[in-house]
Length: 331
Ligand code: AMP
Image (cartoon, rainbow, N blue to C red):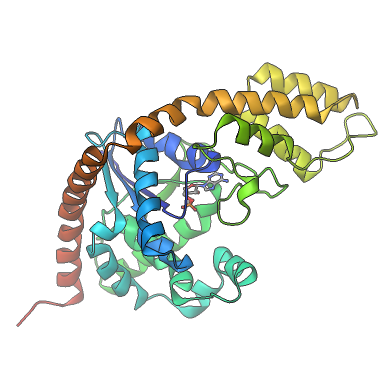
């Protein structure tokens, strides 16, 4: 049975990109694998949330995990900071992670560009913390979206380097996984290539967004004045709307609007109305469950404690082995 590990940062509510890129696959994978899914609250500290915001966002991601269909009886659902063994492995991996390779990481370069006043060491070492998260359970498969491909490659580098350095075959080299298909990237409504909560909230649709907010966001999505020649290639913002339609609408609707585009008869307003209604229908069941679960603090506490216990059992075994391999044997 494969060991599967993946996580979501607790920096806000889940958006459609998180669902399609990651959580939808978590739900499928929990049926036949040994799964660990966690809420990455250590990772979220790079943006310096207040204690109240940190707590609220961890809670809301847990609620949304459950609303999406993650089953705490089938998968181990836990909060990253409940498993301090992860922090120890992170420290140990940092000793063999090199400044050059961390600085070359695309997501780090992007952060330098977008938040030049807060380029902290946590951002630089994001890939070693992510590697620790994954290899702490000796994972084989990591269901993630396309944006995480490079981090996964670094995870394999750190796992392989550990094995070679200590002449062991201890950590598997995990792969980014999407059932044999290309990893997914859901675009933003603001013309950006990736829907993201941190970069532009208006470009993202959250599972918690009520219908009127979804309508407003979709109707405001960036487009252009329309094609002037038949079968013209689509500029990125327009391509994005089509990609979203591909993900959330019936295939016939996609074909209908695509044909109109190719004949220069497209009316984006009509297309967006359709897309908004399809996204509203897609997200409605999640919203309902989120509402029911949010008030059930006892149940949420029980889920988190059960997950922490199972995750620590697995993580502490790895840490015991790693300490032994490194040479921390006690006196
Ligand atoms: P994050 O919100 O950055 O913690 O990402 C959590 C998971 O959602 C990761 O597996 C990401 O690859 C995935 N993800 C985030 N944004 C997108 C997106 N726009 N399209 C597809 N997957 C995404």
